[in-house]
Image 1: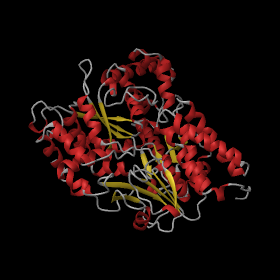
Image 2 (image 1 turned 60 degrees about the vertical axis):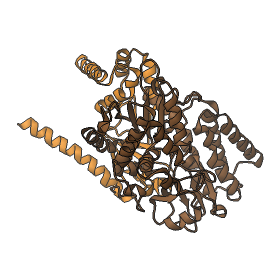
Image 3 (image 1 turned 180 degrees about the horizontal axis):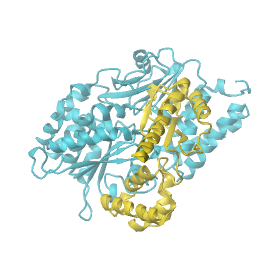
Image 4 (image 1 turned 60 degrees about the horizontal axis):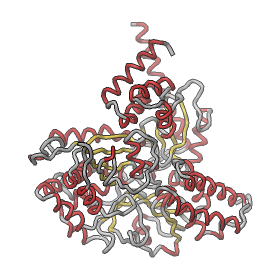
Length: 173
Length: 400
């Protein structure tokens, strides 16, 4: 990591701790916001958070590794989480899962080499009456059929297209 | 592919005007508020069924330590498989939920409230923050609420991060305090030693909405519904093999057969009541009642049609518990893994009756020796499915 990036991360963490409070009880909100901003909580970030809150970095690692929605390693820009629990299972999640793997060329638990997509299982998403259900980042999709999978992924890919177009536009301006 | 409304029946909550319960509560003394809730016989809607009035009484009597404060926590970590009623309540009836928290705060003398929202529901957060901001602007949160001198209370939202065990109240508190979601020994109970060591009431979303209704309409009105030991109406999250899955309201005490008729699930092979930690009821027992004194539930009803492989169902539940056990205590951490291994042996047709008996003995150990409700209840589905469907489970050949 560049020194300037480290400095920015440190500044961000100090601002977060300033906002949520320099107490252990602030740990979860601080980690959640860090992850939202940076995509994961790196070793360096855990060390800085620990220093700021006056706890051992192993304590921070213990928390990050405990919660399914916090992670130490970067995941894809789009995290697809398919519900694997019983009602979605009865509604046919296995075929949706297979098709997700086919479209993305990765297995569950993996991230595409371009860093755009990662595929994970989720426990019950609370959409049991409308399964199979999946989350793409914060967005919920329900009653997903195998033939709809490519559309969901296309919707995500369009975001990259838009970013690319914006970047090109900015370069010309 | 976009979510649709889950509501299948009109809800009693539709008839409760927002603000009425809080206004009625503020006209009463603290003891009378708790008296009203106790008189209604309201029991916790999260599934455990602890009497709400008793919980509040204990928290009201508990002393704050070191100049701290009492807390009201709304448990919106709805993670029990097959449960989604809190999603409906938080999206469509958030005012009644926050009102219930405010009434609880008044009753026990709390100044701070926390809504612990499961990470999977983060998309609701802007809506809920909006409702809180409006309530602050309307004087229903903040200092001297609705002109009641000295009654100060506000609510913040804290997010969970994908851990089922945090629905257990002491694990939830650990998470709020910035720790791994590992349940604590009880006692001491949160009403005495809760968030930051202070007296804390943790109530389910639906319990708090019901509190608003009870204060608005009176304990007698609430108690007139349901059964003697299970008062009131209850929301049910219905999914699985039925024509009309969704959220329903029924009085407690309804028979499983009646419920199945109403959701288009008649002719089912079995029904899982209470989610993965609940129990599997075969068709021969559909005359049983859904109530605290018979089959208790936090509202999860999963219907299994005739063609379903019950061992596959048991396996799905056990995979869930292996994933979601916090790993703190051995009976749960190792027990669930051994049960899943046993299910895989049964799948291969490689499990002797003697070994099956050993697995059932292990289930008893887990129920007795696990530290929290997760490990104590995780064998329930396995035991009930094994008991009722043994003839389709033993002696499988690979082709099944």
